[in-house]
Amino acid sequence: MWTVLIAGLGVAIALEGAVYALAPGAMKDVIARIGAMSPDQLRLAGLTALCLGVAIVALAVR
Image (cartoon, rainbow, N blue to C red; front, side, top):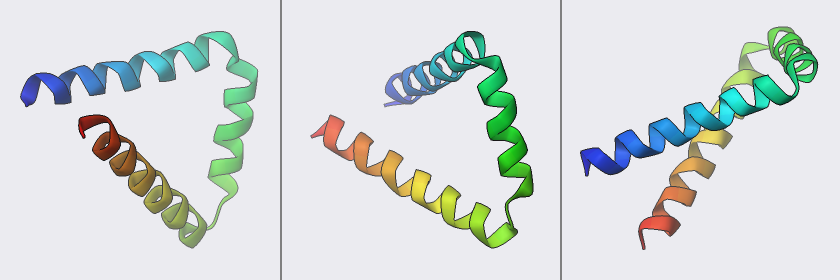
């Protein structure tokens, strides 16, 4: 189980690194937009991402 979790973390970090490497300007814009979000909007976006991630992992493990 730990191996799968560590592998998943590695994939997430690699994908994020690829986005920064391929489109650094776009990522700066995204970060600026995130900084302008209200705490409630940011919380909702975080909960949405959390639920989506858990659903993807649940489907992948099935």
